[in-house]
Image (cartoon, rainbow, N blue to C red):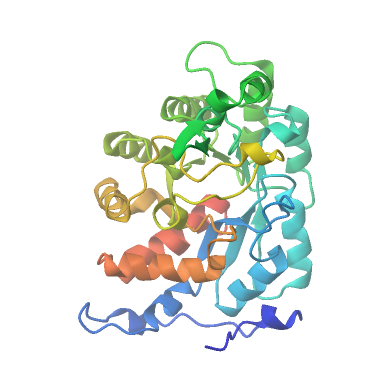
Length: 355
């Protein structure tokens, strides 16, 4: 099949806006067209895209400009870039200057390569070009993740901390963690204060533990932070009742295609050292499409935000991933209206594009 998207040519081309046609949403489950997922892409927002730069050992699938070109050609409204190693809001600024038909955003992840919980880095991110739209408490290098990312030894997954004493000595002490009770650090206080001053910015829990995410939700309420996203709730270990309670408090819940379609393959290499390459299955992580769909139904669609978390080499492009996600939701008999709420309406509220 010929790829219709303009990124193939390497040119920056103008894009004719695609108009949403809701009349095509009335299909019967037993008489479905190939075009419906494409229609539901029009106006959609992928709120979790990795497009690099990345380590040389783990090249990404497409660069940020190519991702935006493909998304614009599909009629999508926006993309939110995650950059594990750098400044995604700066990259979004470059994309917005050169790719018509779409407006992109970036966020900031407080990873250990930036000093973890570092107010200076957060302040810089909030003032970089347009400013970032979310502050995340980290990905691979939260204490919760760092204790679980694993290597293969004799065919079995062994956490880095158990396999490599140097990892336990050097990386675990600098991994991000949130106190579950009592006073918080001056650094955390300063960061929460900065987020609270910017209503367009949301707090992203990142890959912390469930108790830490719930403490962050408490702190967000205490500091007057209006928008919180609970990431991958949280890596699949949050109960349905906990998710319902968080949604009732106004938190958004994230569900990503990578959670159920590409869960157990090597993904982003966060650590430069070859031996610290996560082999794709954090211990205890939950990754089943049917269970995720059941969770979304039971918790309710009003606070769920769907994204891909794509950008890894083993997966298709993020836009192709969004189409797959939409088609999968149709397979599980979610209505087009419900799907569109989770891929367009809710993420627009989260990132402040619903004005």
